[in-house]
Length: 130
Image (cartoon, rainbow, N blue to C red; front, side, top):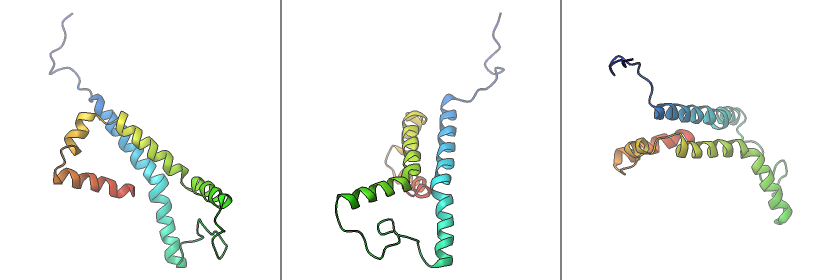
């Protein structure tokens, strides 16, 4: 059985296009969920109440706790509970850069160190606030 000429064969998306699309979806969805949406509402609350809310260090108390192992542990636990979702998205994005984005494409777009590529990398980093 003869094969159809290459021009008549259906075009398939290149495998790296799926990786780039999946990485983009994880980046936009993850950053929206853990960064953009919560900070938008925090900004509205800060504008309305002229306050950023309770401090992670002092909470509702007037002064910070005395230095010590218990205070350090308490701060680490509270901080971890506040940022665990952003940490997870950051790990997913870091892994996605390694696995989903084709190395040659990434080097072509960002890898030569020219001003335009550096500006593009900076522009990509600004929405992530990282």
